[in-house]
Amino acid sequence: MRLAAFGPPGAGKGTQTIRIAKHFKIAHISTGDLLREQIRLKTPLGISIQEAMNNGRLVSDEIVTNMVISLFHDFDKSGFIFDGFPRNLNQAEAFDEYLKKLGIGLDKVITIDVPDEVIIGRISGRLTCPDCGRTFHIKYSLPEKEGICDECGASLIHRKDDSAESVGNRLKAYHEAMQPVLEFYKKQGILEIVDGNGNIDEITERILALFKV
Ligand code: AMP
Image 1 (cartoon, protein in one colour):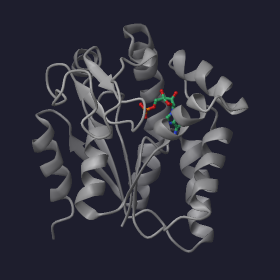
Image 2 (image 1 turned 90 degrees about the vertical axis):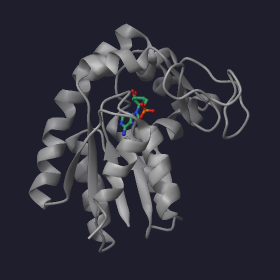
Image 3 (image 1 turned 30 degrees about the vertical axis):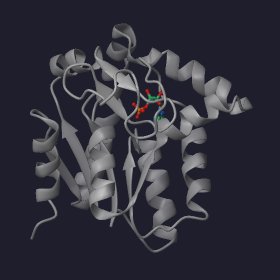
Image 4 (image 1 turned 120 degrees about the vertical axis):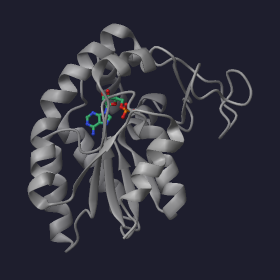
């Protein structure tokens, strides 16, 4: 099962893709987490990544695509779900070409659809674990212990790129970049649009329903 899922920032794609990965026992791959790892490790690449992320911009296609392809080098490619990749047509085409060379392809691409106004409300309360990438919300998805990640015990943070200004930039960039990606996968007949309004369990159910025959 080879999947990719996207949605605007705050659509719940992080939470949902972790749940789907657990449900199907497949790998969860978040390009946002992989990029934040480079920042944390203070690699030379980390500096340009941090600059882009803090300004609500996408990291360059070259950095992201190379990162994903090198991760895939030694990776079980039979089951995975991408969280936030591909983010534009360039990345979608490059990854598609890479998979084609291996004689495989994505099975389903899931987009979580949420209106921009709803997103802005959600993002202001989002808390992120800097270590494992899991997200929580001060109203809708509290951690068991205040300020602490349920998954790994690290202290939760409010990400710099979750500020209102940064979110505005990200939503605009998201819509511009994703429209051609949706068309690309629609043409392949693998695009699934899921209504992202509602609580976390309802959305998971809607996603899982796509796999019931
Ligand atoms: P996320 O954790 O998916 O919300 O991503 C956080 C930030 O990481 C984004 O705003 C981008 O700056 C960067 N990012 C994550 N995935 C990608 C990607 N596939 N291409 C380019 N930038 C990305």
